[in-house]
Image (cartoon, rainbow, N blue to C red; front, side, top):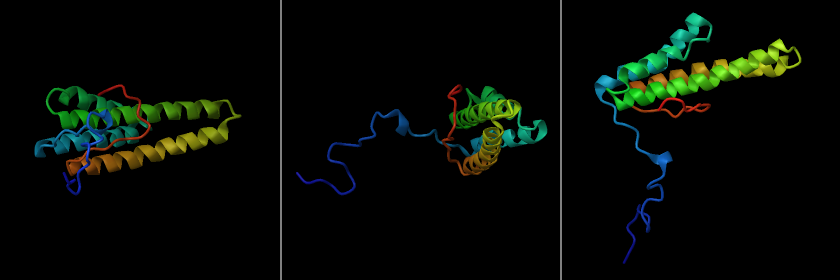
Length: 143
C-alpha cells in the first residue's frame, strides 16, 4: 500500500485535540457584530481611560451568545483578552503607587495599552473578513 502525498499515514495527528477545533463559520450578517465586539473595546477604552474596555464585548456576548457562534466567540475572546490586560494594568498601577515598582509599573501599563490597541485593531479587521483571532493574555472566563 502506498501513501498518498499530503496525507499522514496514521491520520491527522490533530484529530481530537481541542486546540485544533474548527472555528465557527462566519455568515455575512455576523461579521459586523463580531467586528463591533472587538471595536467596542477601543471605543470604551477611549471614553473611560481604559477602565471599562471589557463592557462592550460583554454586552455583545450577552446579546449574541445564543444567536451566532461566530459573534459569541469574537465577543468572548475580546472580553477575556480585556480582562487579562485590565488585571495587568491594575498590577502596573499598584507597582506605581508603591513607588519602588515605578519602572515595572510603567512597563506593564505601556504593554497593556499597546496590546489593547494592536490586538483589537487586528481582531476587528479579521472579523470583517470572517476570520477569528486567538488573543494572547486571555483569562478564559467567557466561552
